[in-house]
Length: 338
Image (cartoon, rainbow, N blue to C red):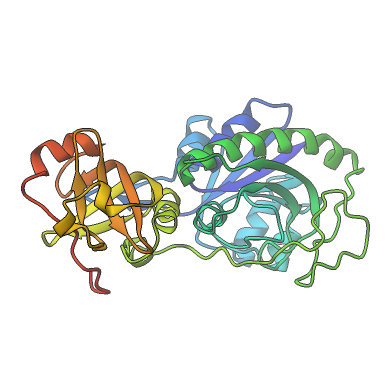
């Protein structure tokens, strides 16, 4: 079967690589235009474009599919389009450019977490389960009928980056299993539940009653740590924002990134501080020989594991503490301008 592949970031590129090693022919790749990367802002092809160009596959670079581009895609002779994080919705004329339409790998259990950042939002919300959904694309936002689903448990302490890697591999397997049925015309996509959880036909994936939450892209402002939150909420924020845009606070007026941390729960302050200083103070940093702790809301403690001070590489928090223990006492109060 001849396939057009549409995708942009690294997980899409990994999926493309797997397709190239399979039994189907990728005749063209659609990706976003080159973007500035690094401090010098050098225009760089997307990860997907790099894989395609190395394999000698024609590449179309566009922020959106116009009628003219849809006509060019149709000329490739592709029978099916496969999308993984391309970054733009397709209109009806683009959806009809290939005979079998387009299918999309989405990293959530649809209809939950529709949108651009399902993995980050799932971790931020404290979900325990997630998965990958393969669905038939329509003109809506991740709303098309479901072809197949695979579920997985979110592991304790798992960052968005690590979870996305696992989901990418699960998605590759899911796609590989579904393509023969799609090619043979025997795949039977099922409608998604609507917002009330109603599903008119059978529900083989047990999605009835599923939530419908928007998976909006998370901003740098949202990545700023509010130490008045309880430690568990802050831990989720840190894990969700790793690797991008990375959770941060302010320390002596400079950005201080936190890449990994673990919530320790409520604490007996008198057991770890002098009686005169046992009063709880959110944002205060506590050092000992083996731990770096921060006081958080609701009487909780957060243990910092991996940090990145301004101008430095990422490092274990204990390594940072050896030079900072007598120089800092607490994080700055968050402000909207930081």
